[in-house]
Length: 67
Ligand SMILES: [Zn+2]
Image (tube, rainbow, N blue to C red):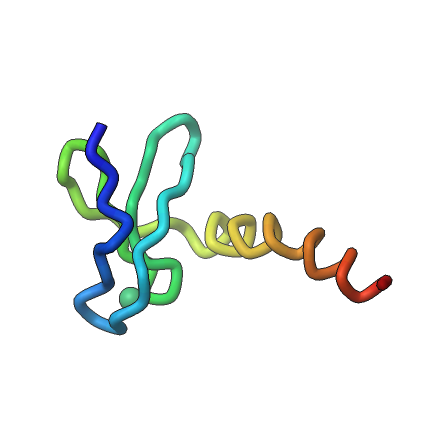
């Protein structure tokens, strides 16, 4: 599988990230909410899914606050 980690968003120039969305691998930009499937199709995630994505990172932030 080809992973293009050096890819950047054409709109905001942020590095693209890979996520697992209900078992499907999506590559895209969380800032612009633009995601590309492994088939090359572009899609958008529901706002709730974006919230869930950001929530994944919050436990790490919480532990940093405690130290
Ligand atoms: Zn972007």
